[in-house]
Image: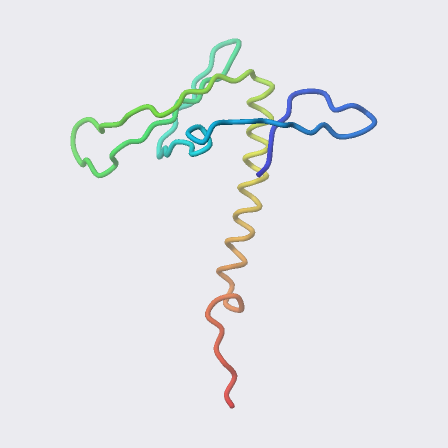
Length: 108
């Protein structure tokens, strides 16, 4: 899992984080929709779970989490997401190559 760290790393080494969370928080929340907004001072990402199967009228949904970020942290988050998405696409692309799919057994 990639991370974003907006703190300064000492010149003589790396920083290691020891972050604790309870099991309920660790389970996370499922979201299939996000809205990003900003002010002069911060970005806000609102995550929601919506019912995309509704074909007419308003689409029902519920907000599952809302996160406010500083502009600096937002930039680092975008960079980390782009890096991880690129790695995921590379891995998925390798899986889709014919030589990594169902391999045919050589004839006896």
